[in-house]
Length: 241
Ligand code: NDP
Image (cartoon, rainbow, N blue to C red):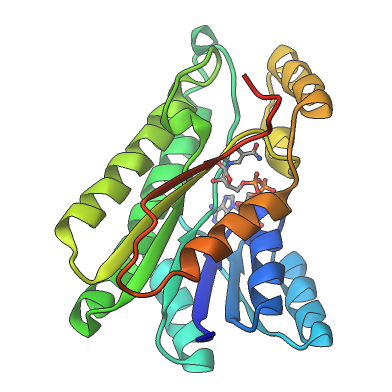
């Protein structure tokens, strides 16, 4: 198997952390980006213990300058970027009538602008090199809208549109969207509205999968030969409606 340099945003917990650990175990070189530097540093220190290669780089995906620095530091450590996993995301769900404008803006900034910043930081080089792979983490909310999730779904529908746009325009750079269903992570701790938070905590207890399931889907997309592009994968609990 060819080993790759893989950059993962939002690698300090949940799906990003699981992906970093799993991909490193498969022999890839992983660069972990997130705001909680202590968390990514401790994961990056763990990875070599099982033979992997990892580096932790502070990153706020809402800043294009940060994203470019993330890519530059990862390249300096491991060489050219083969894969970028745009995974960072937030999900402060609440009824629209609460008008939590700050939360709406945060979802747009992290879930959509963050993905676009990632694309902007790697696409020119990948296009010039005629190779590379951008994996965007969508959601089942990229395909349907549920109560309390209007704005979150809007950002995840947009991620789907961006991924499809990339795919259509490129004959060399691969574009993949992987869309998790309910997955046991810290994402739900960011729900401030008490009723919505209680509803999802309850759902998670009965209907959820582990981050490892999503990490394995990411690894599957990456492992394909260069002429095969997995465009979309939805990975959800068997019990999820
Ligand atoms: P977590 O809360 O565990 O992870 C989210 C990650 O995003 C953290 O590492 C966090 O790191 C990072 N992050 C948030 N804001 C920023 C920022 N401004 N800059 C850089 N990193 C940021 O949740 P998940 O693992 O569940 O979420 C990962 C992705 O999966 C998200 O895109 C989410 O929408 C998607 N998803 C998750 C589902 C689930 O059920 N869990 C279902 C569908 C999709 P830090 O705070 O350290 O910066």
